[in-house]
Amino acid sequence: MEELLEVTRKQLRFQKIISALLAVIIVMLLVAGTMFARQMNQMTTAMNEAVEKLQDIDVEGINDAISSTQAMLESVDEFSAAVDQVTDRVKDFDTWMSGIFGN
Image 1 (spheres, helix red, strand yellow):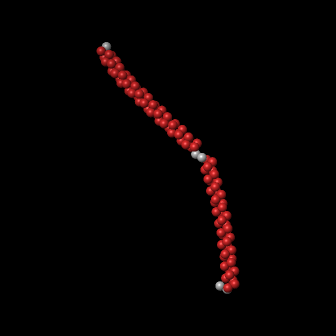
Image 2: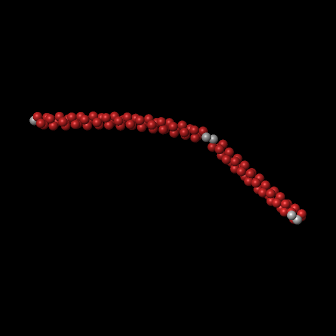
Image 3: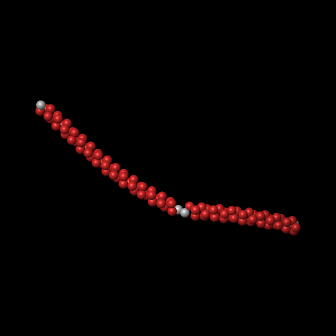
């Protein structure tokens, strides 16, 4: 009978240790869950701020600037073509003058 009581006490001691470890694990999970929830709230706040800033961007202004830049580039292309024509005419004139003077 004494041996049975000793075995029962050992089992009870192990059960207490296991219960204490389980309680510690539960507390750690609760702390981790709370920290995770706070991080998620911070991330949500940051995302909301980012969305607000993105909504403040003047997309139409950017599109107008791009259109203006494209128009300017087209104008530069036209100017470059005109310069090329003048260069060709100067070369033709130079060739004609060389032909007259025999150079």
